[in-house]
Image 1 (cartoon, rainbow, N blue to C red):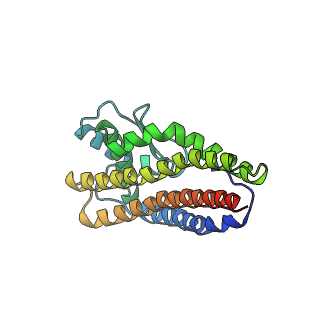
Image 2: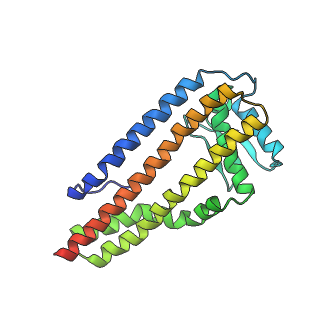
Image 3: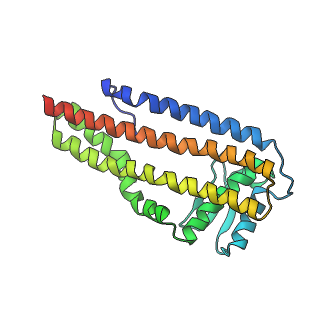
Length: 231
């Protein structure tokens, strides 16, 4: 999301930005901690992902290694679970949890999980709205004093906010699926599952933070429109 001119309404966004900073610190520190905790199974994150996919009958989904740290994701277009080096080749509690989480997204895709399908539908409008909505609103406010332009920017940006909100149940559900599958197939014992849950809960904070920032920006734009009406 672009960063724009500072104005008094920016104070609304500051608490959410602070929360995001905390969430990023939390997920990095928690992941690093449990990356050092080896699971009893000798299976790596890649092994776990492939085995879960096999047991769920998703033989059309590949597992590949990707670059970066904590860059793990599921690509629904290519049907690929992409795992970072720390996850792909490690048998740590953290790696197994992250691999299972991304596999959870592949399972959601295969089962046409409604929030995931809705999020895919929203993506084009959300991508456009996140880039141009705030820009249109801010230019409309500062340069043209146009309530119409600000309102248009708000409408466009609302799609991006809705996308972030819908992302929350998608991510929470993927983590829930991951933990259930790992314990169902005895890939983690009860104690190991506690560590995995902490990693996934920390990761969930980043999505909560992103949603809060989006909502705060939307509130800011609504206040700006109200200021124009009061002029």
